[in-house]
Amino acid sequence: METIEMVELGEENLNDKGCFCLRSKPNSTGYLNKNEWLMGKFNEGLKYIKIMENRKQAGFIEYTPIEYSSRVVYGENYLVIHCLWVQITGKGYASKLINKCIQDAKEQNKNGVIVITNPDTSWTPSKDVFIKNNFIKVDHAPYGFELLVNKFADSPDPYFPNDWDERLTHFKDLTILRTQQCPFIDISTDNVIKAANKLDINAEIIDMKNREELLKLSPTPYGIYGVIYKNKLISYHRLTVHSAMKRLIELDHLKSVTR
Image (spheres, rainbow, N blue to C red):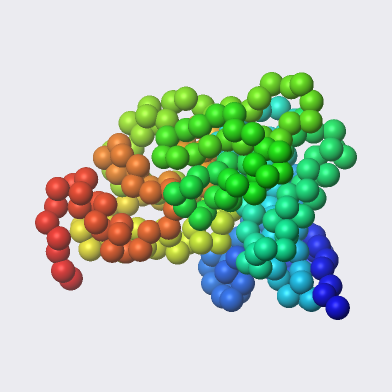
């Protein structure tokens, strides 16, 4: 008989249970950074819940109050879903996890639940399952980002800032903006640094320490990772070394080099 259960991570069981992503490399820098990041966020109301099928991990959801969120979105009294991932599809697990978040939001007397989607990357949740669960689109931003919300009350809609182009003007040199909310940030950073080194381009890393910095600096609603060069967005998700080199060359009009 199939057994389905939800397991919530917290300070008392994080080291034993571990987060979902990159769990095959528990000693990697990215995985360790993610666990350390989680330890600092549980007391802010962050929830990290895994769904288990026959004691095997089938998926997870991560969400937190908007005032502590890693996404660049404004609003009052909402929960924000950071991540939703299900590896066993067709069984309604994604909806179960979304409904768990909605239930928590109602119990906390929130105005609703927010999620940011983008069809061009797997680094954000898929839009369709949220539409299925009564979310509606209320805003959009460059690079394909959409803001969806499931509201419980007649409250103001959440919204994106509108100064995305202006943000890019502050970064002429190659700059990587990041937090440790995702365990793949370390790999993503390394790939860009390797590409830059091959092209003799210096890179600066800015570790955003709090939500205020993130809201001010991030070039996209995704918030936790952005690569900018010559006032242009290179990427907001992981690139291979080759892809990063190609984008840098296109912007710098450099000839390809082999080293």
